[in-house]
Image (cartoon, rainbow over the protein chains, first blue to last red):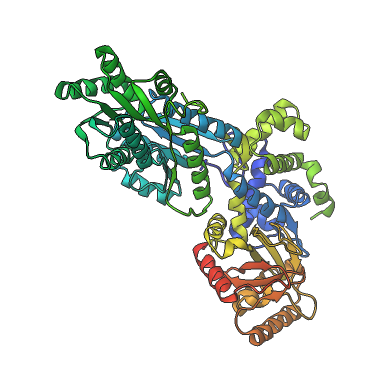
Length: 371
Length: 245
């Protein structure tokens, strides 16, 4: 609240004194809560009588004040009209916070761009923070956004737990927080791909390619629900093939270099792997490099549907299938949910699951990849 | 006091008229970039800059990334109509979230003497003979009978608002007593909450808000429509009046 000197309209930054004086007079009448006469207004506001009379007349002409039969002045109907419009236009000009795990992955770049386009259309602002895959950093970023006065927050979380306190603060402040791509405890709503379905479809396809027999390994990722669901879905599919052995699972960290390291570790322990399930395309690129370098026949199935992965699918491998997500649609749905929650709307369910689509050599033709 | 001086108010305080044009523009189009404001109200760039700076300094408007928007002063001034008894933002949020009410047009109305003044409204899906609008005013007393909304208030609250606006609306003491007698008779005859026909043709169910201000929540219903579930509607309005306070 800016400092002001009651009764002089001397708001800092004021170049047109009448504007501040009018605000003072109206605020005085609103505070008193009843119609007021000119002498009382003069006495309480400290304004000269001539100014008070002129201003009251002008405000009455504009229906911001109403003059009564006894010469008193009361708040006018136009205040209600404009006050209601102020509350309505709160939806426009929102400040949207977007927290992403990193900016390396084109998947998140698509989401940033999508949200920026929505914001431009809605005349809102977007503030983007990248956590560089660090949960502590993302927690601090979330806190800063809440302190900084954002209206809604979309978070692509780097951890499933650890943000609960911040989520409670967000609730208390009336700031909806929608998790996108993965769930995190305490978020008001979530929008994710059906990651379990992604793992299941990738697993069954790999099993079909392997004719139901062989050895496979898993490269998983950060401890977030999306990755856990993908791995769970893949394992559930593998359970249908007793002649396929899941011989190893290593942790990857969602980039090409980590994919290479994970692949090297797997091949060190299991030189003759038939297939690998990798939790996302970016990690899979690194795994594919190792396979190509070593001249191996190992096939990769992964999740995301990025352009580079689809290129390999078209070429016949090492990536032979990728369960495509729609990062733009996830961001759009997340933004829509946040807007609904902000205006007090209700959701039918707390998490929206968006289906994935498996892109293989049979289905890549009509698919438009992102990234 | 010179009435002529008042009638020439905007001539002596032209900034008020210009400010009102700006507020109107932002109410319809907000947020509006600075470059659009001057041409829209017929002001030169330097004058526009001074005016917008002053409007922002006194919180009539606020700056956003995308332009100027209506500022926080206006909702605060509107609170002057209802005191601290009701939060108009919370009213809107709770209305939207209520599974019964959000189908119906619900308004926050203030009884100012004999005037029923609509302060805020949320529009439902039913078509009404007259859709209430913020700022709309209805005469609540017709000489020998009043609008149903007046009888919803308790006697002390109705007496208080009649006394507060007595001079403003030229209400004699005998008129005020007539109104109070009529309202008491109405309350006695009607008993509990009822849907009643208002002068504008809408059927209305009104509940007073908690507190000592003459504030009502009113559900506006299309006349002769299939009867709304009165107990559910009454309960929902009652809950809303508590939550929005």
